[in-house]
Length: 274
Image 1 (cartoon, helix red, strand yellow):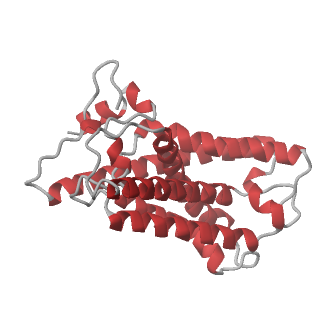
Image 2: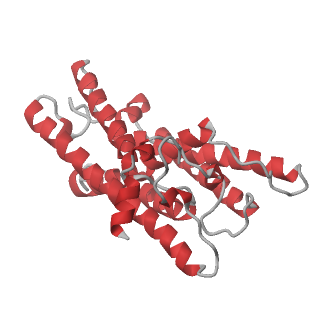
């Protein structure tokens, strides 16, 4: 079984944002109906509202435009984007189905661009949230400098808690080969931090670095920290993929009488997309 899973995951077609069952982006893992469920659409609307509200709260409580220079907030923007996108296309699909007297459209759902953007942003949001939470509380948080208020907890711990819940709710798969998404996202932040430093930018505390570990006055040490950070994030991606796999296997075990055909669990034939 392990060999089959690894063989499937490392198939080149799984590098791309393609998936045979586009309906998976519209359905909850735990629903039995093949059509969009109103309860799931409500959940995703509440999730979007939560992220939008907490994002605004975080931005308003921060020091103006410097809110944008922190990786925590880049990651939180990804959380908000995926939640808003999903709520939008779920509500739109639910309204379309209701217009058909509650019957789902019998035509196969195409793999739309909005699903690809959602899939990418969801993967980034989950993995970066884990990276931010672990890194912040282990290496950055200082009780003498950082207030342990609601906003701090929400963006540095609530992010991982909520995205873990969401990872257990969605039906679409998570790909090991999609690790390039959160890695590229974080690498972009590292490159931004260099540019920001060279432009004379400072943190909200007035230091010439955004984070102490990204002090480009000491480039050798900082490059090492960035490398270690990317390796650590790769580990977080594998962990998130493992949770996604566990979710799907648990779902199968709870419904033993149901016929489970997981096209995304099989290696596609050459030229096909998954």
